[in-house]
Length: 146
Image (tube, rainbow, N blue to C red; front, side):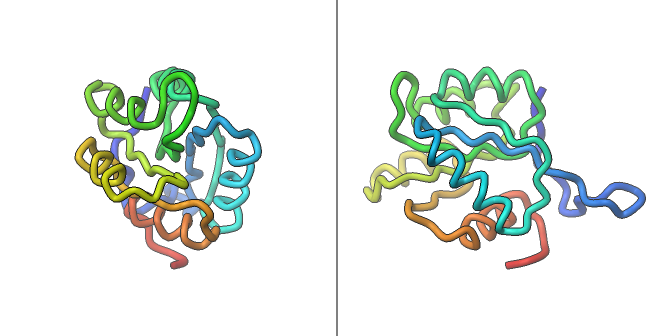
């Protein structure tokens, strides 16, 4: 199961915030923890946070779970981030799940390639938690803190 673009109103009928379900994909456990912590610090309402160490594991998670946004690195062993984005965008089950790439790769060609494949945002490492929060809010069409 996956998600399509969430509505800009992310509250239940009783006004409680709907908790986001992000998937963080990076071969570094330390970086996955940093991204998770940055999401928390940014004030986003995080529910279940999923993690994967490579693209293959990420593809399994996004096909089996309701994911609101995928935050992935480019350089990983096995299936890298570019191949993950390529496969997600060509699969009707996962094509609508927004992907944000978080990478130390500063090449403009890489970002342009990923944008052609359908990513919704690109954030360079190192980054500030606020920058990640702003980008995720923009990608998901959420208001709130900027």
